Image (cartoon, rainbow, N blue to C red; front, side):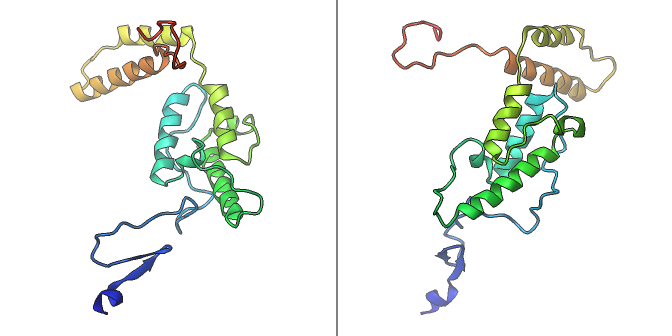
Amino acid sequence: MAAELEKTIVGDKPHSSGGDEKKTHSPYDLNASDNPENIITQVQLRGENYDEWARAVKISLRVRRKWEFIDGTHTEPGKDAPELEDWWTVQSMIVLWILNTIEPSLQTTVAYAENAKTLWEDIKERFSVVNGPRIQQLKADLTRCKQEGAFMAAYYGKLKILWDELTNCDQIPKCTYGACKCSIGS
């Protein structure tokens, strides 16, 4: 009986106050501090910084347990599903969060999407263009990068950013076919 008194209800599942059980989260949960005006990352999409921006937004949405709406893990419920309204509420919130991280001059050029996954894919298609000139620019920046009296940690950070961006741009293609004999992965 004492054990039953110690139990509390969190979400839909009972949990003991002993801390041995983990709270389950609904993908539709929004915190009291979540609102449409939130700026979820200080990195603003300016066009040329897509990779940095996408990484920052992805991390921020993962922290909020909302990335699954972007990567397609959590799909739209059926038209008669009781959680459909909650799904659209979260979609709208994510869309606004993403738009809040885009430079105002670019916001008007981004597709008007109510679905966060559609918006994300449109932005990716437009701004994640990997091209030869950008790779060449990064290589040139690396050859010109000098310590010039900066602290070693700052110099290393500057180099690391350039190397990471170059690595992201200049990725080795991978074969996506299971039984392929193209030898691209060899």
